[in-house]
Length: 361
Image (cartoon, rainbow, N blue to C red; front, top):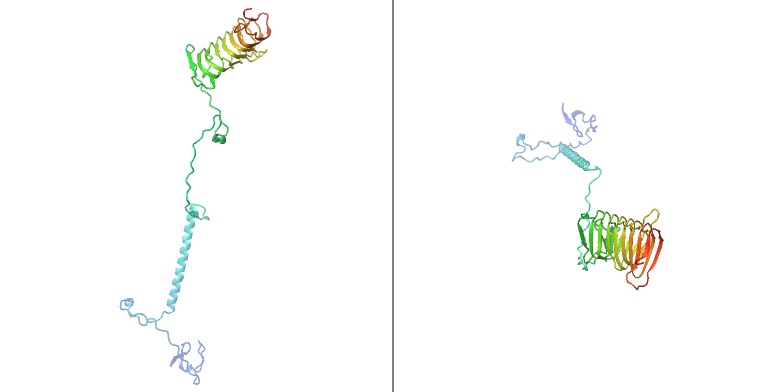
């Protein structure tokens, strides 16, 4: 039985059925004697056409080039390679991002990315001005704080003078204040254990705190303008002063056979503290001796005790004022030169056992 291919789909059919029955696959119209036969569809080219029979000669130097066109298999292979490359690339990108995120989390906040700050644009070079000449530095005026100290805060108090140990009682210490003495001179050590000090030179102000236990301060060779004795003179101590036309102030007690000698012609000597029932003030007591030469002398403290003696020599235009004399104390006064006008003398209470008189009477 002879078979022929269907002119539409190529299905093998019995030749006798071509003009009688429809094709079971493509339902082609049966070929009749009145319908011209359609041109048969050319068959696909053989993919192995032109290739050598031995596969080892496929890539040889003399291998012929293939003449067939790429078919569906080649297109499918290219598509598969494309999708494989795209998948590999996507996986690579995701892997790099995951690695960068792990590094950022290790160094700090994983959500933050370090950004290098932009540098400011460089300014154009400008010509620099030469430094202005400065004048010589001027020191601040004396006793005036500098501007820097004024800004930093209140001025600090000066450091206290160092207190030196006193000399031994059996040694005489001489202090010369020099040709350029300070305005105020104070002994660098206390006089309370029998020290013997001699002062020489010239000062404006001499400050003495106290003398005790037989201490001796001989300032008869020191010329001063003002002398202040703020403490007591006690226990057979001795004080000698030279204050011509100056001022001497006592605010403490002179006691227990102590001795005071003051030469202040034309000056003033005052014992300034009043003696009351509970306060001795600038009292002179217990056998002490005070000898004064001055124009003005005033005793506000009481003069008292057995063997207590006070002698006052008054210069021109003088006056004397005594608050009270008690016990067996003796107070005498006189003028420095005969023929001067008599001084003004004012005296308070004098005990019956005490003595207040003008010398020579």
